[in-house]
Structure formats: structure tokens, C-alpha cells
Amino acid sequence: MKVLITAPFSDSGLTTLKEAGLEVDHESWLETGKLYLGDKILNVIKEGGYDIIVVEGDEVKDEVIEGTNLKIIASVRNNPNNISVPTATAKGIPVIAAPGRNTVAVAELTIALMLSQARRIIKAERLLKNDFMIDDFSDFSKMYKMTTGFELQGKTVGIIGLGQIGIEVAKRLNAFGVNLLVTDPYVPSARLEEVGAIAVELEELLRESDIVSIHCPQTEETMGMLGADQFAMMKKTAIIINTARASITDENALKAALETGVIAGAGLDVFSMEPVDCDNEFLELDNVTVTPHIGGNTTDTIEKQSRMIAEDIKALLSGGSPKNILNPEVLDVGGS
Image (cartoon, rainbow, N blue to C red):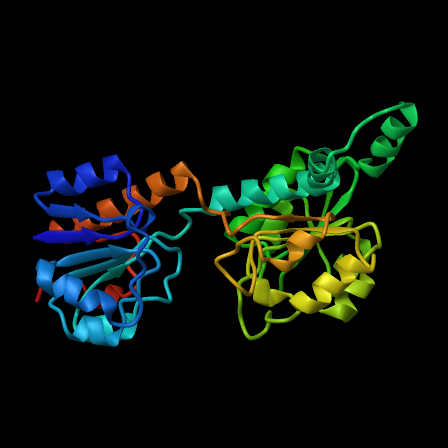
């Protein structure tokens, strides 16, 4: 059987597939610079005679699934919306994913963005790069005042959404000695107790927090949940961190709040317009740390997703049960 992998994949993952007797072609989008949207990957699959495909951002929609004879479809994403799971299910094709592959990576970037803002790292670096010179001690004192930050210890951090990533952020924040507030209508009390957090309504979280960190999923309920009215509730000294989805905030209202001093700063890894380049409007602001959606961009994430996908493909081929299948109903569990 032949496998086409267009996602980043580790050497160990490739070895696992090859040892299972598969012929593997690895053409990562990181190397090719290609993204197959619509039905563009259809001919690639047909011409290559592939039985299994592993993607990240490439679309494997109805026309692709119906026009090929794929035996397994895999995505290295947590919850892929680029694959038509119902169509695959109708054809009896297992679809596997890699949930939690980037949980730690995103949690750690969240902490990095908090520290960057708390200690005004971006402002300090930009100041030095902008031909800043110290001619006398008054210049030094001016610089020191401009870059005065604050410590996390003793501060209140509000976490919106205590899911897989939110809980990992909370665990790491415990080491800094912060007070944790959480808004999440679905969080069990045991999870709150695990990290010593207090459940509050959104309005209270916004009013009391020195840092607000967003970790809820994009749903009809959460889209646009933070706008001008919500930013006005926050402390003028507060910062907001978003490594979840840009749609959870009103970006125009957020930029205005940052420009006018309604809130003090932001650390942002997600935007309505992506991929991010030098035209990103938040780069104009010295009180914002901008990263180009790199939350999960670590070698460890690649290793985790590769291991998860390779092991599940191997399990499917040997008649076992994959751990991360999105449509388990396609498996003949009864053996009939």
C-alpha cells in the first residue's frame, strides 16, 4: 500500500510506517510550499496510486473522497475541518486525527506572551533597534521608565476556557504564584480544584484580572464574545492574550482599546487575516506582541503528531483499534 504524507512528519514516524510494509512518499508542505484546496489533491492521489493520505491543511472534501479509492484518511490536526468525515464514513473510510498534539506547545507560548507583555520585552527591543542612544544619565532613566514592567507573582489571571490547553496554562501559572479565575460553563469542579482556580462569570473575570487569556473554542456562542463593552470592563493596566481564535474577539474594538489605553497591552498569535506578514495592523503598536500563529510550531508537536498517526495507521492495518478515530462506526467491531 502507498502512503502520501503532505504534513510535517518525523523520521521516527516515517520509520514506523515503512516497517509496517508501507511505501511512503513524504512531501511536507513546509518543503514544497504547496497547499491543496478544493479538489486539487484529487489528481495527485489518483496519479500516485495512493491508498492512504496524511494531511495538515490540505482539503480532502467530498469530490476527492468520492473520486479516489482511499483506505485511510489522516489529519495531524486536533479536530480537522478540512476533511469531509461524513462522506468518508459513507464510504467506510476511517478518518484519524491527532488531538492534543500541540497542547503543551500552545500553553508554553501563552506563558511566553504573558511574560513578554508583563516585562515589556517587545517595547524594549524596539526602543533599542530604533537608534536609541544614551548620551547622559537622563536618557538611561527615560529608558528605564519606558520599560518598567510587572511581576506575575500575586497577580490575578483570568482564563476563558479551561479545556486541554487552558488547564496546561493554569498548571504552569501555579508556579508563578498567581490567583486564577476561570470562566467556563462546562468545566467540572474537580478540574478547577486541580489548579486552585475559582469559577466566575465573564464580567467578574474581566474586571478583576490583571491578565486575561483566551482558550475557548470557536463556536456560535463564543464568536465576538469580547468587544468594546468587554474591553471597557477590564483594568487599564490589564493585558489580554489570545492563542485560541481571532474570531472570539472583535479585532477592530481590540485595536482601538489598545490604541486609546482602555487596556495596557496584548499578546496575539491568531488573527482574522492569515498568514500573517509585515502588513499586520497590530505591528504598529508597541504594546502588542505579535506572533504569526506559531502556537503549535515546535519539533515536539511534529514528533507527537507523527507518532499518533503512524501508530493508528499501523493499528488499522493490523485489525486493531486506533486511539484517535473520528468515525469508529466504520470499523467492523463485530467481525461480521
